[in-house]
Image (cartoon, rainbow, N blue to C red; front, side, top):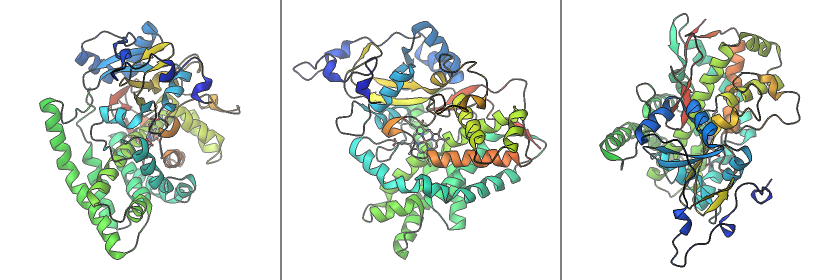
Length: 453
Ligand code: HEM
């Protein structure tokens, strides 16, 4: 359904208050929707510590559209009505006239996401970057690699310690990094692939899950220190990527994967720009994938009857898909779809000014009792027996939705099958782990503390 067909929700600027003659936006004076009043730092910490409760409390008090004020990003308007959220996501059409930008919004929260990359760019730059890389993510390309992905998953799981407490999240990061380096970048040189996967693992490492978003280099002393550390960690990865690019260029063999597409389509471009683009892709690839794998393992580990049924059903069948869909509903790795408005719009009855940062919050949308009865229960059956399951957006929506859905689903299916093959994962601790926010990703509070047998 197009944005125009939804009378309730996003109305483009032509119907919103006009710009003033001097080019300024009178609607800038329009007040942001009300929202929780907390100090910016205490609000940020509360949001990161328990994003679901924080957002639920705000929705109960202020309704489906409200403003949260965060220390590192400034005010963000949260849109928790499903139709309005979809309409908002669709505002970034990719055209130069787009009413919202996803890249700009993401760079506001993840300052390291390069404006040259698919993840962090907008308009024409984004369209060409996405089109260039897409063949490496196309479902048929990924399907041809499913066996190799399964082999990587099985090998990792076989090497994990049995019988003692272990944290899944860092192990899943390592697994996701190896799939990315070998099957998406297409690095075949064994030592280089291993070194890259190892170094990449450390790129975004923080001790534990910090309760605030990583600040940008222009955000005070801490921002400058974090940025300097990031640049230090980035150096060896950039050197390995450059070596791979140079090896392909000098041998005249394009090789495989995203790297092949970039080298082939931009033969003259300097490798620094390619490295910048690849590192942002990597950031988009690592954390949500590792979180999704961890949450799936935790969900299946605490629901042995569902794990048993999964073993009995056909691999790749409807029940496997339902289990994955339910895990992504209950624990969507990304906290939201982010868009920065370029024009004034009216959304769910609220006039919003240009330059407003907005977020469609996945945890609220996916646990909305109006759409999901008993919303906090892990119940794959809710996705079965209908023409189309209930609407969820774990991979976002519209032209800026995740490019790697097929790859992500393939990895999740590989994990589900490996867990059906005799591996038991038992979460430790009396309560299920709560979601906490790490930058923009929802991870388990104890990073998935389990015992394997
Ligand atoms: C289960 C795992 C994953 C989840 C849940 C996920 C989720 C998302 C979400 C929510 C977005 C933003 C969508 C929007 O704003 O509408 C996104 C964008 C993106 N993701 Fe993923 N992602 C996953 C894995 C990956 C992987 C493995 C890669 C790369 C190998 C990747 C690459 C990207 C890129 C490049 C974008 C930006 C797309 C664009 O703006 O055109 N993601 N992802």
